[in-house]
Length: 136
Image (cartoon, rainbow, N blue to C red):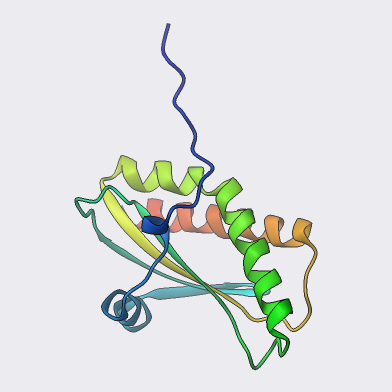
């Protein structure tokens, strides 16, 4: 009998995209698509030795959402929705021994409901997996 694979619902620091070079490479060379209220920019990379398959950047525009409390609340909702649903894209990327950097840019003007955010994150993940299958 096989031992079930442990699914991690954590969001450690090594899964967060940071560093000027990595972020500028993503925005310069990345592909993009739009799932309202998110603009998604992604770029495929060679797998690095740190074992991180997916790195993500979450951004909420100060121009669109004026209040910092609301911006932080939206970012927390996006992180939570990503944390709960990320495993499918991680499995797909690790199966081909690559890495993907993703920027999720919230472009809406109101604070959304968590159910809507989670539904949109699932749609984004589905689209990323489809794009990965086309890229192979």
